[in-house]
Image (tube, rainbow, N blue to C red; front, side):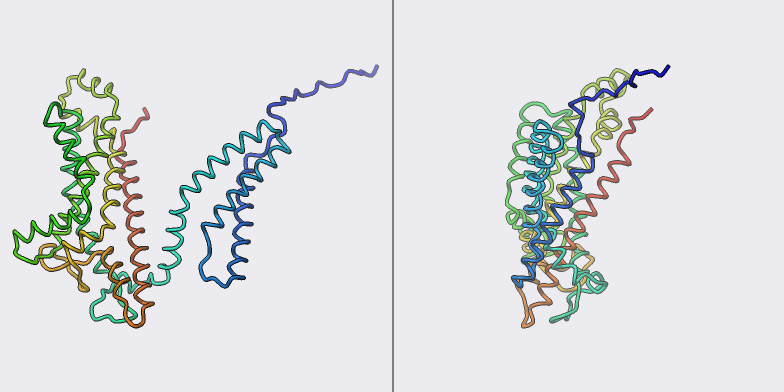
Length: 361
């Protein structure tokens, strides 16, 4: 006898039926960006412009993605899921709009400065160079030396100050320190340069411009950033960790050294990198305090010292009859400065990952 009972059918959940594949939104985004890029490339060729409009291509590509993902989701998944994807896409659009200036900046600097990046640029100076040729090795060395000395001064002082404010500071003294740090945060950079120039002029004589003076100016700008960022990170360390250490009989100074700082090391490293990025591109204080030079100078206490921001500034304003080599060097110097900041940030992330406390058993 043949059974007429049909096999059981799989239950269909209306909330999960008709779902787009996980990679579908990314595919729609890639397709929209490619289409927008192709349209703007054709417009560039038709208008004869040299520069590609990366901002317009990205913006209209993301706008097209918002519309397409809503339409596709509504056809396949229904209105409820389509509205969810539409709002999510709008949030992504807001993020892209906020990032457009950065995208434009990086694209422009890379496009304009990559042509002059070569071995000569990183090994030669501008001594006796008129027109083409030369490099920025002397400016890179000056930037690293002055910023490095400023970091060596600012980080220990700033970290110890933040530890005092979080762990020990009470009463009027802590309030006064906090007030002074807030005031220093708002000091214009040129004022820091004038302060450093006046200080070393009193010590070494009138008209003194040395690399150490530039490092002092950067220290004034860097110190409050280190203090505020480190203080905020240290306050995020749970008090339970401190109390557990005290319960085991560990003294306070050792608790700070072995528990608090290792727990906050990732945030502290990020704060230090933010402070370095804050000062490494300063032009006015270094122009006043350290001056400028086309020669190599490895001595922070003798002679004027060039830096990358000042190098870019003078390459742009002191153009010769053939202006293009000067413009190319300015863009290449700006690209090098961005690359240095990026490398320092990657190094900070690596250091934070290595020295962060291990949470696994």
